[in-house]
Image (cartoon, rainbow, N blue to C red; front, side, top):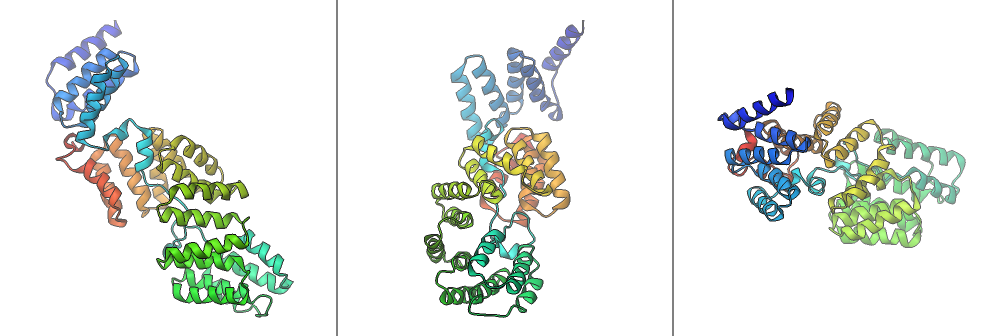
Length: 398
């Protein structure tokens, strides 16, 4: 009896004309029928949506799925072609690889102008410096002070690091590392030219002081001199080829220069030297996903989730859910992350994109627009134009 009532109700819905607000229900009815295995009924509902909204690519996408499931490959391909012409990014609804390419990814880098932002990693690799201190054998008291400097630099306590460094008695044994650390402080203060001079002085005093070459490389990169940055870093690797930090930075340089295949190899080496290198794992996973290798990328990101802090973990989990199409869960996680990071343009953009895919397009478009006010990005602007321009994607803004 209940099944009969439901069928009568569905028949009434098919026959009666629907208002603009009700039209979007055709999609949901189609989805429900698809989940119940009634492909013929699902096709009827998707046909109704296409008739009511011929400029909405979503109807064509879902109808293409039904045509393909029913063995009508040519009709399915035709609908996919129409959807893509209406909006080249509409296939994102059905294709996790496209979602993986177009959402905003977080990776670790060396952004000294925004030291308080999440996912900015300081090149103060404590283990690397500790090993160098041991090799230099500069004396316990000086070693302790320098360790304090390093810890505070790593925690972004630049004033404390600078005042502590002033207490270090400079000797021939520790001069290179003191000059290097002074350079790092200048680097973090945005005084790149002074930092360059200090790193060069450190190298001049000890041409085998490898960490200074690494830091000079970062300095040149921030000065917009990629050739010099690469040259300095390769010199560091030539002197000491078993430091994972150097390959991490080399990967970042290659990514910045557009050499993604080389960057992948660099991350692989960094991880072969340190399998628990969280920052390298995250960046490697994001790079893989941007290249369409989203399954492998997600597997690495899942590993990184367990190593991340609470905020990072929330963001990474949101990304994973988004790529897998679990939009409600993804949105909940993005919103949770934004509570403690309200001005994070990347998370705001991802939240907006998720809302669009949930057909909450007015909210989603407003949020993406807000994210673009915080951080201009041509690729994201294109996504906004394609999903939020009423002339291109008319029904999605109803």
